Length: 86
Image (tube, rainbow, N blue to C red; front, side, top):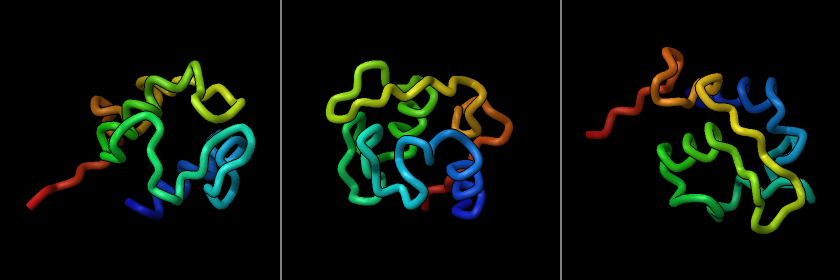
C-alpha cells in the first residue's frame, strides 16, 4: 500500500502544494510531522479530507480541491485500500 500511495501522491496534484517530499510549501501543510489540521490522522479522517477537499485553509494559502469519488481513498472506490485491524 505504501508504494501505491507514493505513486498516487506523486502522480496527482498533491506534490504541487505539499512538495515532492511532503514537507509542505506555502500552499499546503507538511504531511510528515503528524500535525493534523483537519482530523485525527486516522485513515478515515485523511480520506475525508482528500475526498471533500479544504475550501478554507487554516494555515496555508492553497485551497485543496475535493477529489470526491475519483479518489482511490474514497470508501466506495473499488481501488480503496483495505486495512485490517487485529
